[in-house]
Image 1 (spheres, helix red, strand yellow):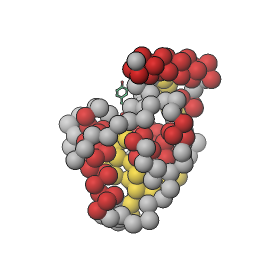
Image 2: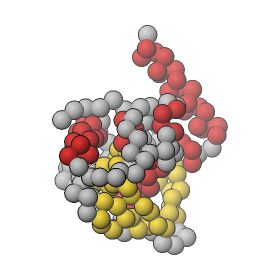
Image 3: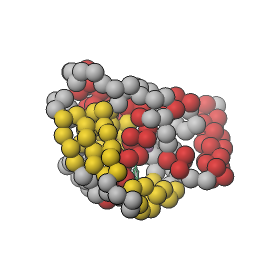
Length: 169
Ligand code: QAP
Ligand code: CO
């Protein structure tokens, strides 16, 4: 197992559109194990492969309090079930230290492959529904800061650029 470095906004590599996984093999399962280790270490509740500079459609999530509900989504697809949406204060391991309110659909259906390559479906609610939409955005090169005002986004960009320059010294 390995801890992987996480790309941070405004790194342009976070804008890469990830490619579908064609075969769920041991190499993918090793990536998934490393992603869980990296996410739990952070600690975080969700991580997309894009965030560790691997541009394939793999997401790991665990919104439980005690690391008891690891979920894997390979090639996830989301269908919005109605017009209801709700706000949630989102954060992101790629935007450390910043949280902003984002509106997203509340009722969704998710189709994906699990870590054995078997298809499954679920209708997540609450934080899990927010998280899977946030992570699917990553696979499409999108970040939660794209859902907030350009003013707030550029303020976050400046602060993180300053932090990155300080870290490089
Ligand atoms: C995505 O985010 C998410 O700023 C997962 O300093 C978050 O795990 C979806 C984290 C909230 C929906 C709601 C953020 C850790 C973790 C930080 C995360 C930080 C340290 C974020
Ligand atoms: Co994120």
